[in-house]
Length: 286
Image (cartoon, rainbow, N blue to C red):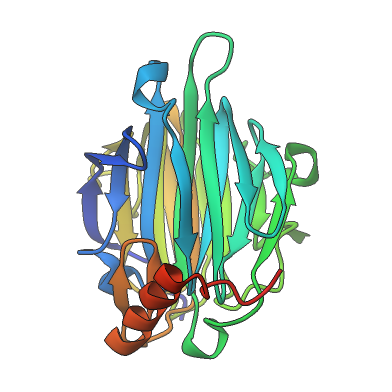
């Protein structure tokens, strides 16, 4: 018998500073990572003031993880140690697998009005893939299909599958799903997620009920909903509608050794990564 997932916990994103002084909201991070396996961190960088983001994220290393950047407003210029250069525009996604090691920078830019809004999600890599070759997947807005479901729900499918439509990001180790969901007032979404997978939603706009029943609380913007296990999700929009990202993935169940931008399985591996970075032997490819 199919079971509807209920809410385990609701978190409110917290202001923090990262990079060279970028003001952002952290939906979850180091303290919450064990219960969100295989995901490590979700940052919401959202500002109308260029002084709060223009210094960006200068050159820094990553190893052992994937970083997924999704732009909603403004742009991010990026470059890396493999020679890649480009711009992540509104509606675009960059899915970067750091693997054995990459050094890159990300420099946010506002639109004509100074508005800048994006999300960055970190996903862990299993021990067997932590030293894989680094790679980029740059996905433009036009490459991401949008599905309109019966009842009016609109879903941009970045990764995963909705109503038989698959997103452009495939062949990812943790079998993730990443959906951008818009529900007009009074509409809902029922969506199956494999039992045992971690699932969460981060509310961008409006409010919704994220578990069944009219008595369920409305949950609004800048809040993270973490579900219990089950077979299916049920979300119903509030009076003003809602927009949220829905993410799920297969837990790794492995130990985490994490410091800054590097996530390994043991403290010895972590120490080696930083020592290699100091010695100039960090990069294994390119």
